[in-house]
Length: 175
Image (cartoon, rainbow, N blue to C red; front, side, top):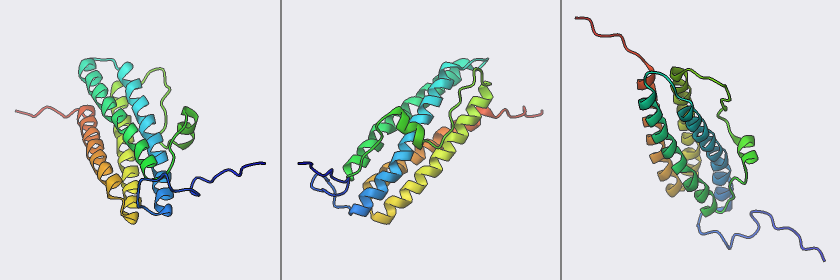
């Protein structure tokens, strides 16, 4: 006798939330590509951290290390939110590659200023993606996920700001 496979939404007895089935489905579906983008941004940030060079090496190297740690810290919380609302999350690097919207950078050499500018743009794109997920959470009254996202938006905007300021050389003030 063959036992029919359960659909992801057929048995909700394991779900520790009062959110609707539609909320669980839509919020976890919105979190998956966000998590893929966070992993992609983490790896790119570490890539640039490892390959930084030039006169500001130490400052940029430390900045990107700090930012990488902050980005990586988001991954578990995003995946666990998807599970808490009754969904699933990423399974593999291949799954990340299929869902990520931020482009990888496999270049052998990237100028340090270009690294900072690219990471700044990626952080701004991540912020925009988080705002979209926040809107989905608002639609269903998922204040817990929305609250986490609000903090991550603030962190992402701070990373963008630091990267912008570090990558733009201002002319010296004239006397």
